[in-house]
Length: 419
Ligand code: AMP
Ligand code: MG
Image (cartoon, rainbow, N blue to C red; front, side, top):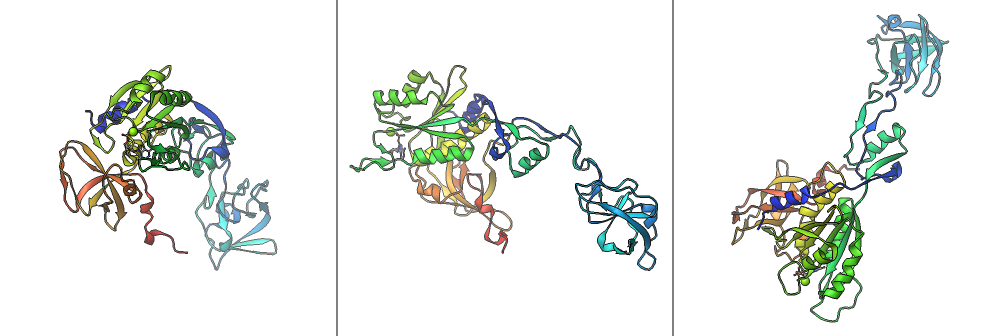
């Protein structure tokens, strides 16, 4: 059986990047930028003022003090968006933040250091030459790459793109990720329960949300019973997907048909089945499509295994497919407050923990029962603590690596701004 790291390597080696699409700037928040963003002009485009005050010649204010102010003739004003006047020796122009520096001026004296009386400006302090001037190109120069392709688009990136006149921008498409839920016992939300052997699906909707969180487009393909006819019918709906996820039916039980049927119906080539991990051991992975550009993940039905397999294998794959430069969940080292013991160390285990921030370190606590069917354990947790192969005990307060799937805890009560 291969190890998790090998499985991840195989998955990522087989990911092909999805195509691009052009989108309006107002629609690309959170998407992956697929082109470099280049400055169309210098910013600022010309020298301008960083303050409200007076544009002067440095020579004219040299030596000015409270008792011996420089006295200059006021000759006009330079507003943001206006044409500035020219100034000569002995003259000053009123200037406002963003106003262009008048020809002849080389320094701006802020309002607080000056006074106007009878069209005369009194300057009470010498300032260094060039003070309060924002120079042309001080932020960036025309032709400079401002944002590189692969970056996640946040509000700041949108602001920059607007400022360089991009109304539309190329982003990577969102892969269509299909969810086929299998199992004779599985019911969708709303279907009447008539027997204790029936199970209401959690996987369909947890996966749906995980796909959204990863930035892709979820598609519920349907629910298939554990029989060939139904499986064949429902799999035919999967053809338009870039990634197919099935849940249930990948272990060795008699009714576990999924692997064989995706191979027959969709031409999936299975690249591995079973990983030495807990939860999620019976996971299957393959590629399909004309150029083997589509991915298949056969995910076990147990709800925790299902969510874990998504976080650990599917999410990095679909983020790579979308061109993200950041494909992994954040990882921290934490002290495991309550320790953890297990009987066998033959698989790498990913235990449900809740991480908190203390003044000097992260502290993790094992949360809830650890069965791969116990979804309430996921509700109580924000990370998967990694217990390596060969390790059967992590002592109290020993360090553990945690893969986070939720980082909200970083906002501790006392860190929140009190309004
Ligand atoms: P399987 O992988 O089909 O052997 O299923 C393993 C366990 O997961 C069984 O107890 C199933 O009832 C349960 N299970 C399978 N599919 C789902 C689902 N969509 N939602 C919740 N539990 C499920
Ligand atoms: Mg089943």
